[in-house]
Image (cartoon, rainbow, N blue to C red; front, side, top):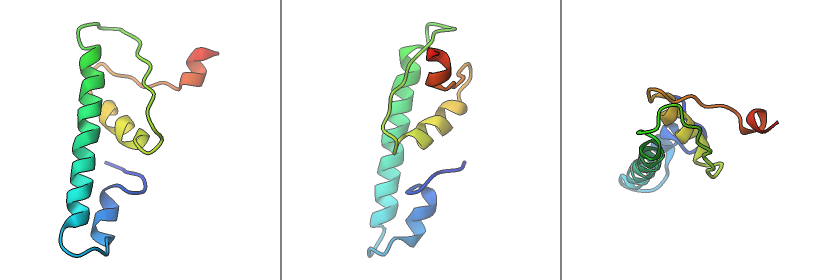
Length: 83
């Protein structure tokens, strides 16, 4: 799984003592998983539904990665759809 800045690769390079950075990134990952699970739950009973998902730029790499792993989900660029 490829992550952008601040993802899994950043945790080993944290300069704080103990496991603070690993705990922080684990909590952030859990939060992102919950967000994506709620997005998926919102249209699970509607096959073929179109969903517009607006997220902060810092969450986009995580959301894209997790949604790409789910069945019956395809991601498209909003600009292409709205033209």
